[in-house]
Length: 184
Image (cartoon, rainbow, N blue to C red; front, side, top):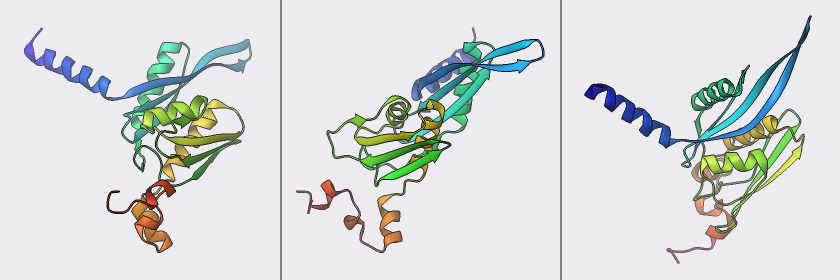
């Protein structure tokens, strides 16, 4: 093996460690054809760097490993940067996709991730440590994951939120940070 090939393999391995991949759902789906049913697998994958970037992807194939590979590739392509605020989110937001609705609310430090299933996986992949969530409507995991990402896309930074509302940035911070003056 040449030195150039070794470097390429090492760089590829380093790139793989950068992201956290989580397979959320593997579901067998069927297409009805003239001779009966043709089965395939639909895989939903979340990819995140635990630093504010997350993406979701769906892959469909005749075998599970091929479906996972396709879903992971699509999730990496769809990665987006989210506006976070010291381990939580800057303000409450609701995301809706199909019949699934997800409410995300900021939480004070030490609360943890209060979420279930697909929402929890997205929160961990994006790197949020403290958040309150509620999944309403349809329990379809695919739609819940997409609604969570849609809600995260709607987040605005504290400065943007303050300028929209015509207030000072210290007035729109979450309540546990508003009372702090001069670092105390």
